[in-house]
Image 1 (cartoon, each protein chain N blue to C red):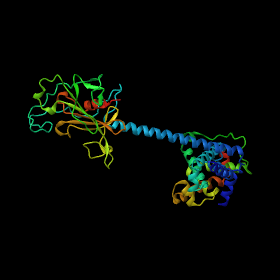
Image 2: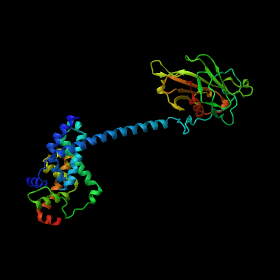
Image 3: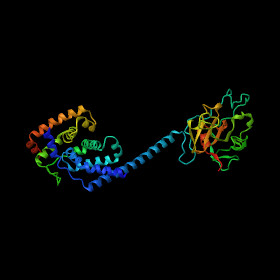
Length: 254
Length: 170
């Protein structure tokens, strides 16, 4: 095959000299390619991050609505079920009074213009409901606040734990397993999260909560402060989405 | 970065000519396409310089890029649609002692399927052994052997009667 090698050698022509211009052009092309590669890498990283965040955001069951108001929870939980007479309400087996009546339409949320009396206030309130300070200190914060319907006729005829929403301050505490909310044994990061307005929240769905009670722990941004909203208000007729919307509007006073 | 540039420039100064000659054979004498292939190979070589130095070595990597770039180009439809003409567009073709023989060889190479074409250039121009050729082309040694055998049979047919082959170019 020496012949073929010779033929190929001739066909390839003489070896061209490499000029400084060739070298410089090759080097510049290489440098440009490296720059492009870096920019592409950064752009691809940014896109990937945005996708991950976007997907994560959409998977979390509540996003902010387009009008900027706290969004619906995205949960398809049914409204608080109407209790049967045999059902134990509020865990108090000695209270045999019926629960407050469930309205035919849920009580709507409206904008709140008057700050609540305690350390926490909410930007939304159930229409016509009033708030007052109850209880004593909770986790270092001074009080709980309770929302009730002042127009509920003869409230005492109904079970005590079927007609209020309570809001209290709490904090995540690290007791060796990571930041953990009160009432929980699992760290916050390991709990399934939902969105409550702009914040991350942990919610007890009616199906898993005790006696239909709905409770939402709303972490205030990335701080350890938490707003806990507990609803046993049968007379609100809310589902978890609405409760999350309300809880998402609650925050510490600035 | 400066070390990398210096090393790269040293490599290019020493090997660019050889790469260009290989590329000329791969492109069957198309000087512009050959220059493109070399530029593509050198650009990729610069981008991966650090890794290439650690692993295969720049020469092996550059050869692989050159061959892959050639095979990729040959697969593209636009390149297939191009047809050869009897006009020589290269105003300054690489000089050769016998233009007719040179054209015959290049035309014979052009008639080979891309992989057979690459195998002939790598084995009989670059003097690479079967194993190295297989590694560069990403195929088995057996494939290289069979491609070589078919390519040589075709080349033999075409080169045994060079005048007739040259005539077909006109």
